[in-house]
Image (cartoon, rainbow, N blue to C red; front, side, top):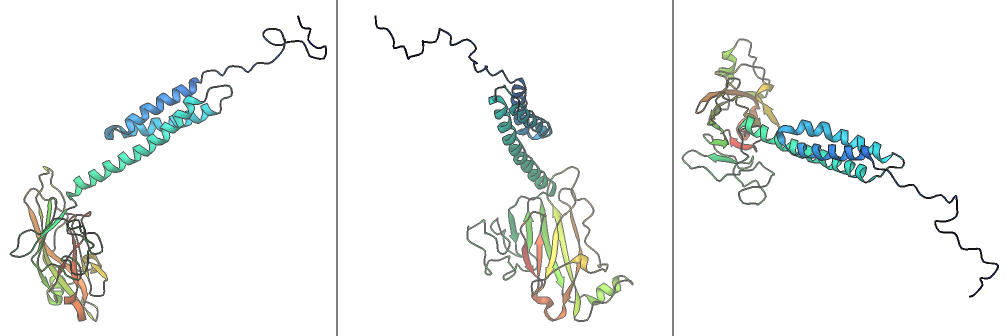
Length: 290
């Protein structure tokens, strides 16, 4: 039997030297478990359009509990970390779902489909997807240009009908110089400023939807001068003859017809266009005034 050298320390007894500290085992993180369960439930509710509010309440709570759990000494961090991650992802998903719900609600409220079609006098409906000037033409995929019909450079003729979803807008006629008719309509109507004249657009708005409560027309019609300036009917503080009624709800198949007054420059009134949006979300379609 070999005797160990005298300079070597004796082997430690089984179990180590007495008094040697051992790392304590980390305890279960109860708060972290509560946080991760809350985060998972909140995430599920955040994906349900009708229960979004529940998800938005639970997810921030889970996030806070997860953060607190991460700073607890001697506790496991896995569940707290998972809770924080799930809560953050759930909040992002909740906002996406909310934006989708709002977008669908707006579409339903205004009755627009996003696909605009135009019927010109004597013609059938043109291809859907007429785009506003400067935007992409969804019908062909090519960029819009000044030669594309429905733009300022190539507007549709008077008498055209613009359709988007449940709404149709028809420009019946345009009176380039309606000074006499406008000033005679109401004694408080002032004459136009020097170098300007009143332009009168006769328009029909038709509702083709089936909402039993009816819907108000949210059609937008502006006059765009030859120089590119936009003039709306509210810029002229005058009462139009037979004004267009946009405040009364329309029911299926009903329409309203009336006039809109715009102040146009006398030198180039006939060179302007009408910019029409059948619904607030529609692309603008331009119609000539002469």
